Picture 1 (cartoon, one colour):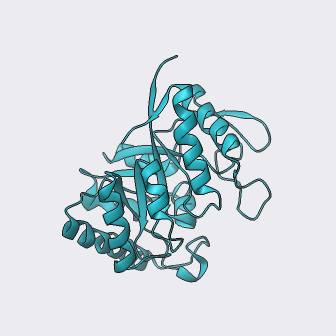
Picture 2: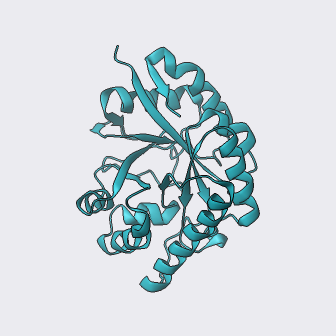
Length: 247
């Protein structure tokens, strides 16, 4: 069986406070930088933990909507959204510069992530906002999405992301968190889900279909209740499938 190397990322700095426990089991992290959660202190704390464990660091900008944790679509002026994304990333960059840590990637959060995957206008705004980093930082985005095609056409560095702890619809959108079976919380089921994507380049949807998908990085949400249990299990079991987490 061919050896496969993968990246596992986690959304952190969102007020859960489990970064010390989970970061040793992942290879990259997405740090909330003030849009949906996070402030200078939380960014500093997480960057230092990431530095200690040689974890690649990314910015996790969101709609500027902490009340809804960035998980609700906003009606917002284009220039205001663009400025917010730029300011969020800049706030993390200032912390990274102080700690001597490079920016590895940028990943939109929540509703913004879902919207730029299918909306050309929003994808354009997001790519414009992160344009200063396009030569040096990856953008983590969904496979076969609107923003993936636009980013590749415009010369951005792209890593396609799949979700290890979320269920998929047949159009490769994520099952809404408001619906049953949106989250995959049992470690064994997360493992099966991830291995299927990594080995077969297919995902089994919530309705049982197998749909083609490509992924370079796999997300386990830091606020999934069983996140630590999942990551510990993956760390132990993935090598049995000839899959290694690459730091």
